[in-house]
Image (cartoon, rainbow, N blue to C red; front, top):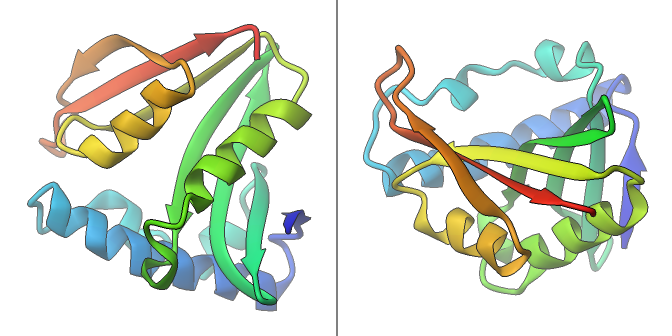
Length: 150
């Protein structure tokens, strides 16, 4: 069910892009913003990314993608998106749990919009705690969370 993806493959990059577009469109509505930076990411941006992508498949369909970066014994969760057709099935929980289990790091971090209550609740269920809030130049208030000893 959970596999590492080769984001340099054109077909896979397009599939990741599609999930990102579908999920981030819903998130933009949830947090009530018109200009949401993740929606400006292109297929080429995904293909050229040096981050790692893992997938969750259901019935042979790509249902969710988590993108991570590992540096200095820290897992940075860059994105965690679930296709809207698969919302409310516990898929984000399963994907996050699996990636935390297979990644030998001492700390994991994630950032999301303060208004993204579902994401914040998911991370809290996994033991993440808030360590910072700020508003970047795009104007969307953000929260950073972390967990130790993954």
